[in-house]
Length: 381
Image (cartoon, rainbow, N blue to C red; front, side, top):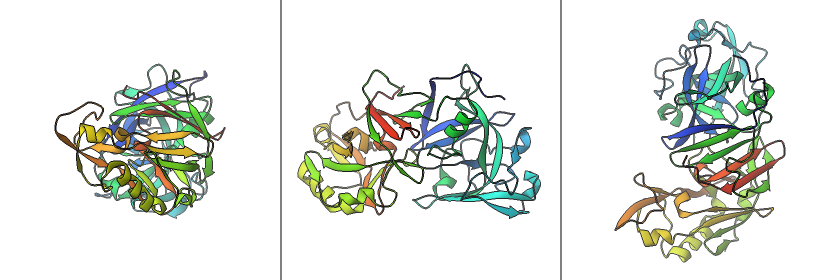
């Protein structure tokens, strides 16, 4: 496989939602083995289970069969002493699965996530292309030789999730957008996401997905490679949150994380947030299932984050409220329906605007220019 030799201005790929996560498909190795991965702007590296590496039930069962390195003629482990994942990987010697890897010494890394799950993997290199459920990109092979992790074991949610693995999209030389750019497959590392509850679209190497709509921009807060934004003000309905706003800037700050389904706000604003919610709705704030008539649901407050340079990021009720059953919250209903708020006010350090904060809008990531763009859009392609 060779990278595209002509400049691609816009590459659109449709992806799906699986088990609450947004999933894209990779086709790996000379045999084009399909692997489903969570699209994650909150991490750097790509990894998934590999046959011969994961032993027993150490990696759980997922959508596809484990990637089989022996089924590809183009793959290899990254040699010890040339580890690519600087600061994470280290050299280990003669593990029990060495016969499958064909190496006595390899680069091993463990990645831990905030909610407690983790994976441990060996750096592996092979040909990787992007695609959808049915195959690679139509009209061209959007791929490159890429270093990913062949997982040895998974813990927590990684063991039980439906997708096979995870693809990190954060700012890092080892991310897939960076590798595509270095291979000449795309003209830059920018990308846009347009998420809906059923799936969405990614645009690589170009601008916003829906150019008909105006897009507002905010300066990116650079921190550990995450796509960070600077929240200056916040409103719940018409009521402004004043107390505890410094929590948005603590530690990692406020990051955009498509790999986290929900939104997590600083615990420092918990009390004023709950007071503002009660003032707006007349009810105590809850993250449990609540029955709403359509009229009650329609009156739930907008939650607005105003960035330091003026961009307003507003969550409507159908963004942050999740139906108990798959349904379209914008259509009237008779009687009551059960909904649950997926905004949690318990983050100790900074905040995470998760996938539900990114729903129903184009979100444009430009690491080189240091900006994030956002515009409301119809993502139900």
